[in-house]
Length: 142
Image (cartoon, rainbow, N blue to C red):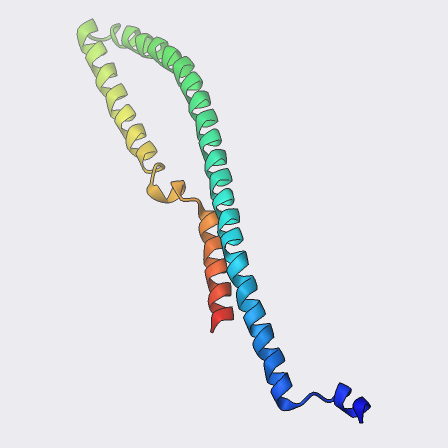
């Protein structure tokens, strides 16, 4: 008789075990959610640091390269002025080269501004991870 009772739980004791396991799962979920958000925050911080570090390195490289290119551009523009001054008045040659350089520079600035949109600054990995966590928690709670 004890053999039968030990292997075959009554319906009320089964319900009690289910309630305890659901309650235990909810308690565990309550303990793990803060840990999950802490880890997500750490991911966000790491991603932001990497983004800032990469941006700083990029700015330094672009600045140094830009300074060298600017010196070369000034020499090339001066050469263009000298060349045009062979066929026209020097002041007109300088004005033509200056205007052409300004128009090309304006086009380059406009093209560069398009690369600084707000979407490129979003911490996309963290946002994706948070969305997965939200979906997972929502799936367990329903």
